[in-house]
Image (cartoon, rainbow, N blue to C red; front, side):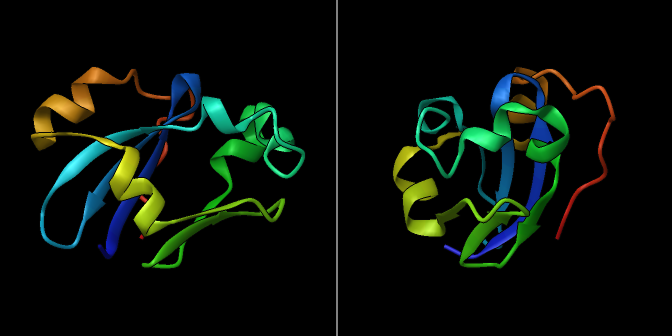
Amino acid sequence: MNIAEIIPKDNYMLYIKAEDGKTGLFDVKPYLESEVFAPLKDSTEFERIHNGKYFIEWDCGADLSADTIQARWETASTGDAQQSAPVDSADAAPLS
């Protein structure tokens, strides 16, 4: 999977669109107790995400591979995925 777009959402969710058009939501909450992901508990840090196409990475050094995302995301149609997760307070623009 190649990642085309990432949008951070409230409640540590990511809206992700793959280059093949599939979309879904990925829950980062289960990772927040590990040392490398702990800084993401700060919503400002959570929103500082970079798209590496085959992985996503935050400024704090935490990262997730596209394989991990693909194995654990909840796929949905584009409209369903964007409506399922509330828009974050900054109403962030897509990162690609």
